[in-house]
Image 1: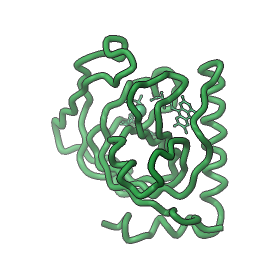
Image 2 (image 1 turned 90 degrees about the vertical axis):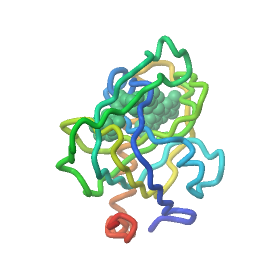
Image 3 (image 1 turned 90 degrees about the horizontal axis):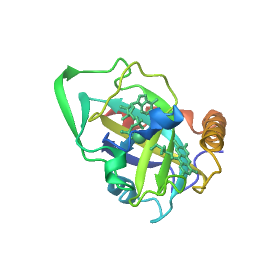
Length: 184
Ligand code: ADP
Ligand code: RBF
Ligand code: MG
């Protein structure tokens, strides 16, 4: 079955700094985008939860400088700055890849502000803070949940990734890779 309306929803954004927990706590890095870009996207407002789709990184990126630590800032994201030192371009520049996305308050961590974060199902050799990210959101997987342990959260995310791969293998999804949106 192809994506069901309102999907595909296209989001043109850029990668910002988050809490820095994705890689360190979970071993699952997530490229964070401004939550406002998600809210403006046409997905019914307040629809927090886990989505799947396609992502493309392009443009120059830099390194993230953290001015506060997550501990210092409590449940608010640390203040960060992206420093682009050189014209870095990823080998993956312009390649459309599968993704899973989490939007909301991360009940497991109890954040005080909503976040929108994308795990690209691909192994990158480096980070790409400040890079451009284009997303095609193609469907909803589940609401956000709380978990009894980090391991239980990781297991559920692995399950989301498995489901995303299954959905993306269905008819009508692959062709979105060649949509005009990803060509620009
Ligand atoms: P933060 O809290 O700052 O988002 P993370 O630990 O979640 O920190 O790491 C996210 C960063 O890791 C992304 O901004 C990106 O630069 C990099 N990264 C490396 N591989 C991936 C991937 N497969 N998916 C998403 N981001 C990745
Ligand atoms: N956080 C939660 O608190 N509950 C969830 O159900 C949840 N599901 C997620 C599913 C996916 C596919 C991803 C990538 C993240 C999810 N997270 C969830 C967010 C996770 O807590 C967050 O990525 C880390 O805190 C790093 O920012
Ligand atoms: Mg992240």
